[in-house]
Amino acid sequence: MLESRYAISRLMLLAIPLLTTCSIHTPFSLAKNQSSPKWRAHQQSLSILSYYQTCGAFAYFSRQKKIYARFNWTQINADHYQLILTNPLGSTEISLNVQSGVAELVNNQGKRYVSNSPEVIIQKLTGMSIPLDNLRQWMLGLPGNATNFTIDSCGYLHTLNYSHNEQRWIVIYQGYHDNTFPALPSNLELRQGDNRIKLKMDSWRL
Image 1 (cartoon, rainbow, N blue to C red):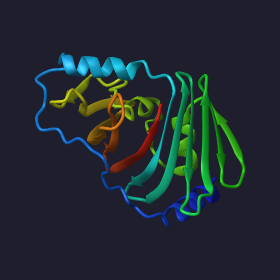
Image 2 (image 1 turned 90 degrees about the vertical axis):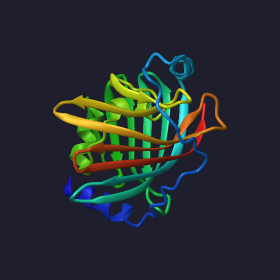
Image 3 (image 1 turned 60 degrees about the vertical axis):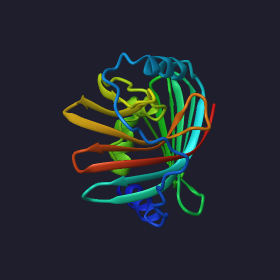
């Protein structure tokens, strides 16, 4: 387990942390409340998406480590998704398949691990705290289980606060792709204590 964690950290540290913004929308002002008609229409358009795929740059920062990687997330249906993290050479470091509540992780040595909690298995094998259960919604620009969130003037999610299991997550949306329908995030940052996760979505496939 320790060897797996070391290998992941060592190889991902070689990646180039290019988390710059591509096609983005910058919010000018915040809507007064969550009942904004623009937000309701946008939320409805996002909610009907059952399949999507996105890839881009991933960065994780904590007091103990800094990890950079490329990621590919495929949401096959509401109960099935796949997450792949690769190093700069294109080799797979982590392959996570979650279906019907069962998570199977394969590391860069081909070892398989099974758990009923994807968040727990990622934490144990990599040392990274990632809110996977909500991340698949947050990546789309939906609040997931969060009820405390703000909307920008275009009706897109701007920030959200979510507390669970004594952890408080803050998500900041730093840009949106305007060439997709519905508009989908291009950059977001997750904060929890001293931990930071940055995602740059280069492309979307719906």
